[in-house]
Amino acid sequence: MQSGGSFAPAEVRFDDLALSKGASKGIVNAMTVDVEDYFQVSAFERHVARHTWNGFESRVCRNTERLLEIFAEAGVTGTFFVLGWVAERFPMLVRRIAEAGHEIASHGYAHRLIYETRPTEFREDLRRARAAIEAASGSPVFGYRAPSYSITNRSLWALDVLIEEGYLYDASIFPIRHDRYGIPSAPRHPYMITRPSGTLWELPGATVRLSGQNLPIGGGGYFRLLPYGWTARGIASVNRREGKPITFYLHPWEIDPDQPRLAAPFVSRFRHYYNLSETESRLRRLLSEFRFGSAFSLLSSAAVLEAAPAPSSHFAFGYLTTPDTSC
Ligand SMILES: [Zn+2]
Image 1: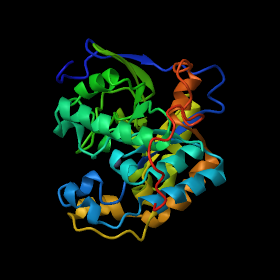
Image 2: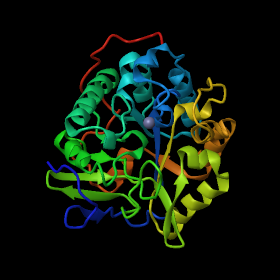
Image 3: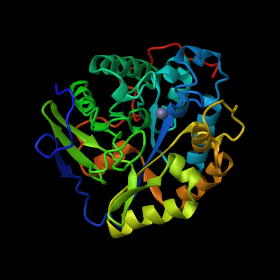
Image 4: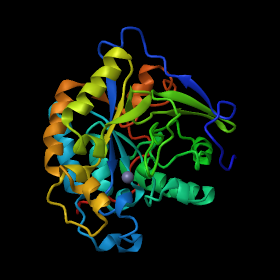
């Protein structure tokens, strides 16, 4: 396994995702949700110790269930990257997401930034999360998203760990410049990564190319902080002009304007709290204007995962935990 390195072609080979003919007219984008609570975000990491998480009022169930209602009304099924910590405490929530037809994937266990962990710690975190998530959902996990897109040039070794742990795809590399994450030179569209340990599909964060730069168009903070038209025009451009799908993301706490306010520096508070009351209506509009499906279905549309069983359509592992009705 490699211990680091740059995003150089000699080390990482990219094979662009080939979409089927005619797909540009009705491109189905990936709708993804990172299932975590408002006090677990990286922006508050320095101010909210992990051992205090249990002491906070949890709002992840009600917010995720609200998202399930919104998606059901729009007839959209997507991918929910569930934090293992959440799956352990609220297995019934994970089960409900799966039963609604959504794909269940992993957001890791403890929401640690990958470039601040060692490979052995990352592997343990992955395994603990997967065990909790698969026990709760009853179906296998194929995909992973790192906390705060923290697979960067400093943590490319994480791709090898994901391959060795049997993941089929990753959605953790944002091809932009940002103070906490991003690999600006990484491809903008879904692609296959070839590493010494094997291959892995990558679903990058959504961008448009403007003035020689990759600019993020959604979702998360970009969807809340910037005007709706920025995201909508960006997705339309990528779908129609480039003929490619995008991967959109959001968090359950982003549709919760009444969540408790935490003490943190101004920039973190601005990024987290600004426009929370706008997100739900914006999301409903987005769902009505574009087509969305799961990350797995996006990759399956290119016939790259056809050998693997479809997630959420069956419960191969059975339910391994006692259902939690306190959610
Ligand atoms: Zn997260």
